[in-house]
Image (cartoon, rainbow, N blue to C red; front, side, top):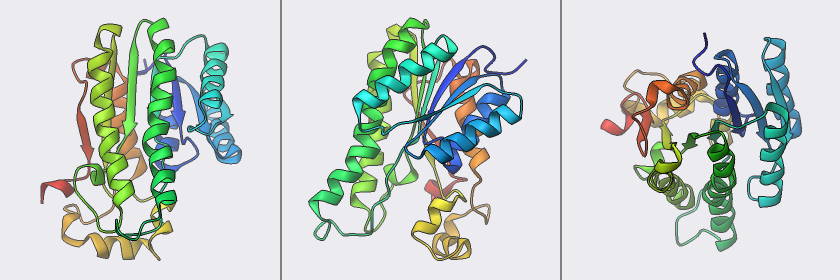
Length: 252
């Protein structure tokens, strides 16, 4: 018996490291999975991996900032699998480094549009599907930088802090719908995304230094395991929570 047997999951950014690992784990635990990404090829690869392992998956191309596209993707998921029980939303945009004074307004808007407004759009349009299923779970991916600050990352920090509070608002407003919402706050996780800002993984380890209490970067599957807990009935008394997966990074 899998922990998500009979469930249907809608996973955004499913072509990425963390969300891809989560989509694969959800499938391994019994869920049918809609693998959603703005990049068709990466979404397709995750869905193909799931099907090759004997699971059920569809790949959907979707820009989370487009309400019509999100609504269509959710409807297609419900049509394919009969319902939607859980949403894992990880779509994010990582901006070039700027101080507040130097950041172009257009860059600020682009980051907030994907990282926060996109989360709102997905949650807003998914909630009627979760209601129709009798309830469900929403897991939003925030970041340790939604809890602590980082230099030259004003839009990212602000957006990820907003994601935490959005999860709490959903949890409060929709408890009577039997919908639970939580935020995961990962620390440095070893994915190709880190190389957008760093020349090498060794450079990432050196930069984070003493905060890496386990002397290593996290792995995508370690975040996926937290996402599995929050999506499953093991976490029925957990809602509106900040769920840190950072090996104590924020304890220092």
